[in-house]
Amino acid sequence: MDILKRNGFTTLECMVSMVILSIIAYMISFSINNSFNLLNKNEEYLKMLALAQNYLNELKYDVKYGEESGEEEKTITVDGFEIKKKIKKQENYYNCYLIVLEVKSIDRSVKIESYVTKK
Image (cartoon, rainbow, N blue to C red; front, side, top):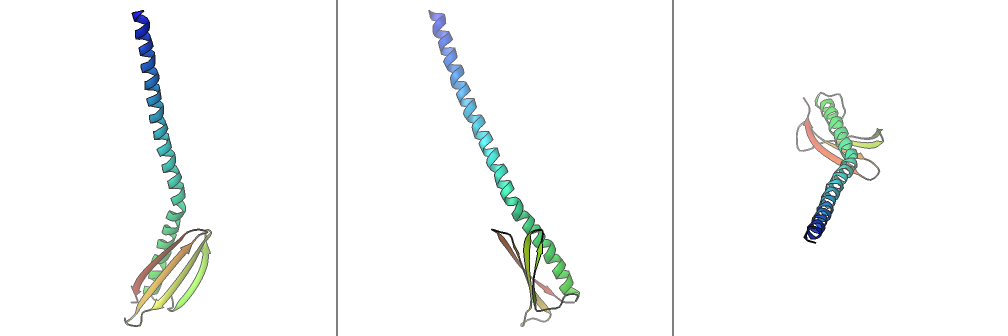
């Protein structure tokens, strides 16, 4: 009779251990799934930031070395993103220009502003 009690207790311990392991495995898989979904959501935002930064660097170079005329506003579409650029001469400073870039997708937008001086 004593052996049956010990075997029953061992079986109960095994069942509780399995439940605890199952809960831990569920929590780990749930957090990995959430992290993966968050990365997928932010992929578009990272593409927009990279596109805006690259385009801003090109515009700064063009304005700095006189290849881009001042006081203009344009909108172009690249890779499904709408890029709106605006170059404005600053009245209070000599040869200083404000460059404003706005990259838009369907539901998000990124706006970057920078100053550059002409050489």
